[in-house]
Image (cartoon, helix red, strand yellow):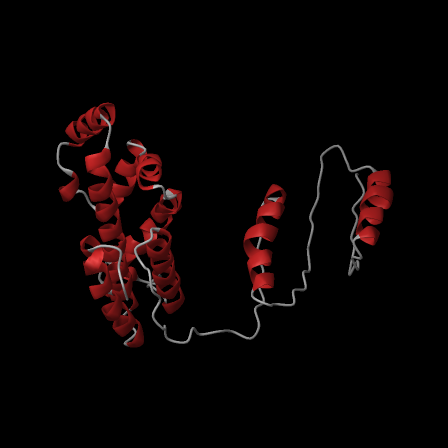
Length: 238
């Protein structure tokens, strides 16, 4: 795999071990190695941006470092993500490197998985790192490297495992329905899935729901979208 600069060459050296760990079922070690790649990406980005900082930005970073009491080189991965947010380095990097790095703001979402991977298996209890978690994390790190422009040529990857059918039962607040459609159903549809959705709605009100709302607005809306009512239960106010 060809890289943009020698500064990121250690990233490619860590890609082979991750696949080896996955093959051997050492998913925690695969996540740890992926975390090292992600940390190297952060340090590369800081090294690229630092010489281009404006004087006032240099001053703000100096103040921030003084508050932390040590240099960036001594930061942990979690501290790096927090520090980048604190000094708005993603925005500075976009301005100076002419590339959008806002995707790295999502890296903190993997904090729990990375911390679990560093724990001895004997203390992971019923929550060990799974193959799916490790594979998803490594794919995300690889995507980050592409988006950062560090990967210029793709090399063949092992065939990704696939599933034939998914049945998912979830519960969430009703006002997250649009997010559920956008973030869950749409990616499945884009994967070529034929999706059937069965929705169970529980609505209750101390004052009572108006019968006209149910018989007209709700029923008409269901008819318009071609919904099939499988069952319905109503309880009258005492």
